[in-house]
Length: 343
Ligand code: SAH
Image (tube, rainbow, N blue to C red):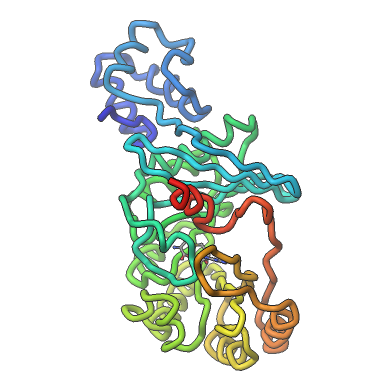
């Protein structure tokens, strides 16, 4: 396997280039090209041809192969299915907001967490993504669309806190002002509740937004839809969140997928309020996306409104997520699943 240069930080890249016997300034030139997203070393026109061919013998520029692309006709949402070097498939979703382009990236090929309502739970876990493979999702889409993505959410396939080291390396590389330059404040990381990872993240002292996929305020019910709850129950999770808030001074977002008859009653809303009382937090209600082969249905509009009202009345900041890319199955894991079903 060749070395993916996107897996290196600028210091490691310099060591690699000088290790091959080239002067240090060449590393800076190569880095600039890499951050622009190039398919081959031949595009690096200010690098001597001999050096390009030496690089090509042992390394790659890391751009991903686009296996399929689905462009929404309703909005600018575009879903990408990428093929990794070893054949595994991941996906990313590009979204357009008033403030610019945002991308939802995958952190693993497959997922180990097994949440019952999530399409990714049907994708067998294959492996962690490397830092470069996460960065490359951004570079490949930037190049394909000729845009500059400004915001990142780590909410695609996989559990980022189950791939901690690589995700941290990716975060450091992507916010580097000499590179892609997306600041921590424009990055959200979503977890189903890997408690030790939340404590570890608090120690990093980086101002990203932490999102927690909560989905049910009752332990027995949450365990039924999210197996992680058996290991880290709601008390432990909320305790970790409180500690994160104190340490980072940052507001946490709780994601709550509204599933009809499962977690959308007024009792659920009241219990959620009592769990989150006094916390520096925001609740994002997500009308559940239907996943083929699963029996869960989206909550009715009325239940969502009622749920949201109860939260507001209790002084909890709440929004209902606007839906993008409805016509292209933009929700979590769905394109990848479709592909698997037809393979
Ligand atoms: N493993 C991480 C990130 C990936 S999932 C996590 O669990 O947070 C990204 C978000 O999409 C999570 O909040 C997840 O619970 C939610 N999600 C998964 N399947 C969904 C569905 N069918 N409808 C709505 N949201 C879903």
